[in-house]
Length: 313
Image (tube, rainbow, N blue to C red; front, side, top):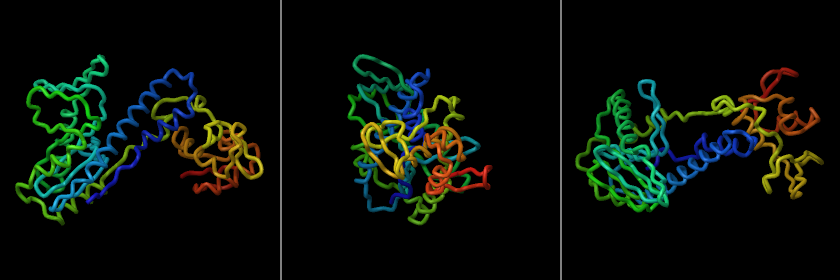
């Protein structure tokens, strides 16, 4: 049973918004673009894992949670996926790594070779060991003692070489359901009700990191974030509000609610509230009454009255 599904990470949503609106002359623009590419690839790998793991339907009770962030001793730790079985908990670390991958033990190293370009990447095994320690502590606080193991899922069908015994299962995501089936329940430490309680406790304790607004968390000057309603048809920035619709001068597309993504971008990038003057400047609307009407129809909450009022999500 799936207790928590995976959703698009806030950091990925925010980065996409930032790349769409940040001035291309910003010295960090290419770094943000690369970060966005990596996060998209990572999320794609995790979704690939989710697709394959649905094949795992054992006869015993179990619980899956995807993309979980917990806090233990003041430290946050994020897990791509968690499986709760009667005999153990499995933490999955999903990697979307292209090229040839060599895994060495003692000391543990992951070496990626992309068309002859070799680099040592941070070891997912070490990441898993850290998360296992925190997960054990988190469960102990709740009176739960159960073995925890880690598995690494590779979204790409890489050319894979494992040199030495790592002590951690490393498999392609399409192989993981079979790997789990071939690992029978040795001892029932948790029954169906206990599995459900632990899964719900984890779900309720999940705390997703909120990076918004990015201009503050990433030290970006708000003036470098470009205003204007973006056309959903051709991506032209600068649609105009005429005849009760947003109209695109480039492709002639028109629609009534094209300002909604603009408001999302404002909250993602600039501030957690917006007033009429700020909305007019960001959307290129001149009429205060039109701006007020659009803000009221945007499912936002109005705070305050008259000139001091502002809107929040």
